Image (tube, rainbow, N blue to C red; front, top):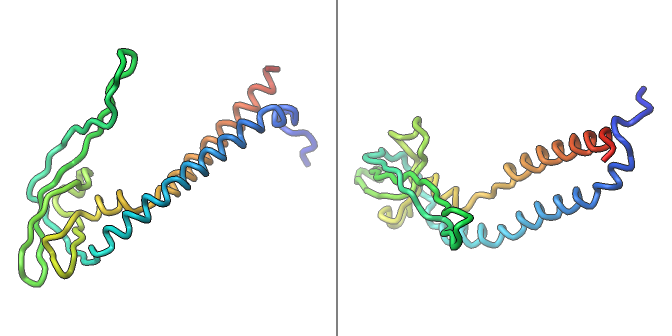
Length: 162
């Protein structure tokens, strides 16, 4: 039976405001994203049809996400995979273009979402998910990893006497 903690209790008392602050920031971050995701779900709800599309062309595009206004920081770019595709609904072939999954194993075929009343209104499932799905699981995993790092930092700081 372990009777001693691997770190001082005082270390926890000293750093608990940082831990609580970090948890609060993570919760606030996720809560602020909920309205945006709900609006996107409503906007794309008519795209209920699914068909496997054949990718006819793909290219990478560099998109400016943040433009720096000083000399100390640099501009921030994101690379998107833009695909051209075709898919079939009721024997008729439809075409589209948009953001797709850039993974090499999905360069030939990707799932397409379309409006059953107007298949010309379509997008890739990858794009639809990027606008409507929550990243809650990724946030939880990040949160657990950060807590583990904080724990080890507390253990290290308590042993070094800082």
